[in-house]
Image 1 (tube, rainbow, N blue to C red):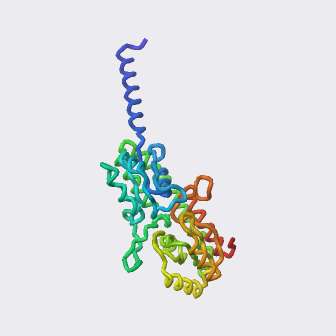
Image 2 (cartoon, one colour):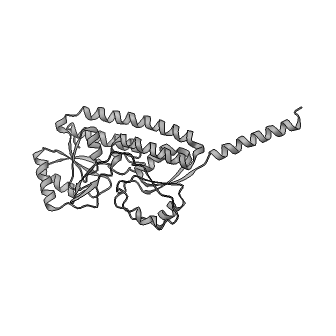
Image 3 (cartoon, rainbow, N blue to C red):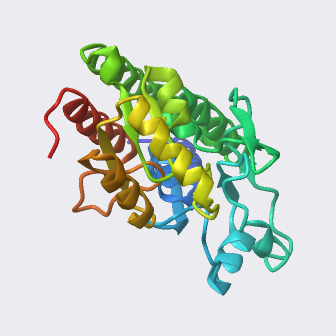
Amino acid sequence: MKHPHLLRTALVSSLMLFTAGAASAKTLNVVTSFSILADVVENVGGDHVKVTNLVGADGDPHDYEPAPQDAIAIHNADVTFLSGEGLEGWFARITKAANGAKAPVVVSDGIKTHEFEEDGEKTTDPHVWNSVANVMIWVDNIKKALIAADPEDAAYFNKNAADYSTVLQALDDNIRHQIAQTPKSARKILTSHDAFGYYGQAYGVSFLSPLGVSTESEASAKDVADLISQIKSENVHIYFLENSNDSRLVRQIAKATGANPGGELYPESLSDSSGPAPTYVELMKYNTALMVQAMNGSTQ
């Protein structure tokens, strides 16, 4: 027969273990600015984050009209994540309404960005995620922010981040291998706007577009004429539409140059769950496969 004090000790120990387990099972309320970032945060946060995402599947992260519930979500969030570098110009409009909200975490901090002249001003290209190596920097920044908000679950976030980084490294290696199989002279593509600069630099593909880094910019008649001349002189034979913005201008340019359609790319938004790009990894695989197929002459 057990002594009463030993039984009490066992019960107290069990209760302490249960309480510790319950304390470590914290769920953070997290807000993300757009669908690609939401997927990466969910991979790092796992079951310990509840993500409210603002710009959903097939949405344009440049051009978004915040809703009143967005301000409420940001006000209540333990952590809010932005990509930054000028992508979410609309975010400032809801920060005042989200009174008392914590400062957002900019996940692109530490990434070497591209800058160039656009409309007479220096502009930073915000589409950093189109290089997988940059998303690995995102992962590290996300992990650190989640640990700061929930230090008791640091081991969980560290493991998720390490596992996901392994997947991303394999993805990066695979993209490089696929592009290497295409002729260098064929690695030229026309798209709707300048969203693939980081992809081009990382993987050796040239992209031309009538619009700048933002879908809110407008191309002048001279810009379009110059682009048509460049496409003809450089023998660009392929054009792609984009899932999240207007395709009329790129179709007109393609018609004027004789470029062939290569399909629809996902440069800055996931598809819905039934589409070809429901996660970041699937998006990069899909975009690469479509481009490689087109560059090798199998246009649709």
